[in-house]
Length: 210
Image (cartoon, rainbow, N blue to C red; front, side, top):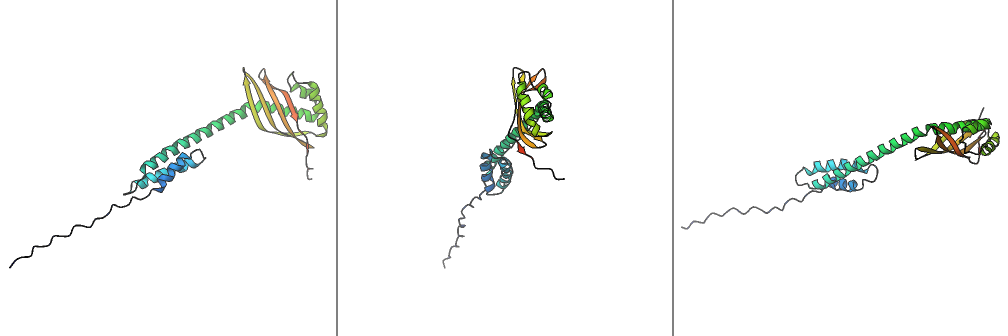
């Protein structure tokens, strides 16, 4: 009697490799890193880059290179924005500090004009300033009332051969009118003197409520 040979085990079923999982955080990190010229986007690139790197450490998840690139671009952007912000802040602080003496002279000039003291206003000016222009401003200001305060919002400092010229602009508030006020001052022997000024059209102030 013949024996039936034993049947061999069937070959194992073929399983296709698992499909790689997408790493959205890595992709978005790279995109936001490239767009680092937009404020705040660089920080987002750094955060998503870290998330993308962590996610890429899981099995069958790619995108680690994209996440690293996005992280690096984000860090560069953050350093650039931080450095630029510090530079602007330091420059603005320096300009405000250097303009303090010029603002004080311009404010005193507006005070003397409001008081009707032409001689004092002329002393606030450089010798190149026409006394007649100052007297005309003092005469015109009699209807404005007493000087109350001045606000300077614009500053421009020019330095040429050690000589400083400061141009400031803002508004001067008098008892009866608020006037746009600008002045150009030149530093003479360490003291600012007005070399030009302008009072714009007056705006009548509202009466003070009792």
